[in-house]
Length: 215
Image 1 (tube, rainbow, N blue to C red):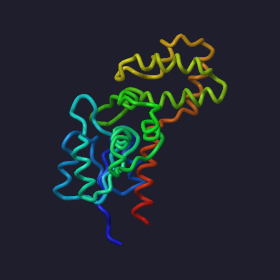
Image 2: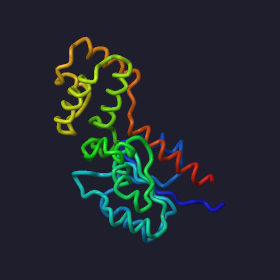
Image 3: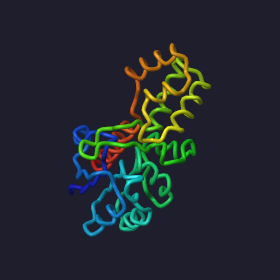
Image 4: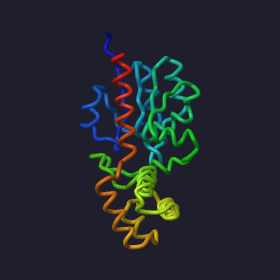
């Protein structure tokens, strides 16, 4: 079997060491405008978009992804920017993977603000929390009886109104007006059972590709 050339655009959604344990690939930093275009001179077999820049640089364009698809490159997206672009381009053959993609596709979330975070440009360490992960964990806490549906709405609105670089659990809980006893229980739940949904989706993208190339 020929070795497939796989390019993965990855940043803060999943640690590089963890990614390499799942899939052997060429890992690039979060995708920006022109990065996919640049690959078309030496076509890979598979391009996976997980992380990408949103605001401080131009985001990857639809046109360059469409060009890759027309060149018969398999393009897969999930977790963050990849989920957003997959929702917009799945009609053209881009493959979307994971809960974040499904949430965009089903209209449960619409804005790139839901997945936007800030991270250390050198270490890729998260410096804020993604709204999509917060929302998922709040819903899980409701299922456990820790908070109510009304509490979720209050927490979500509080988080949504905080500019994404300053968005974190501590600030959201403190500014939400949630009762102190619920805050304590919710903090304990998040410490033990909180899930980074973007990280989980990133793993799903890599596992999907691994299964794909192994046939």
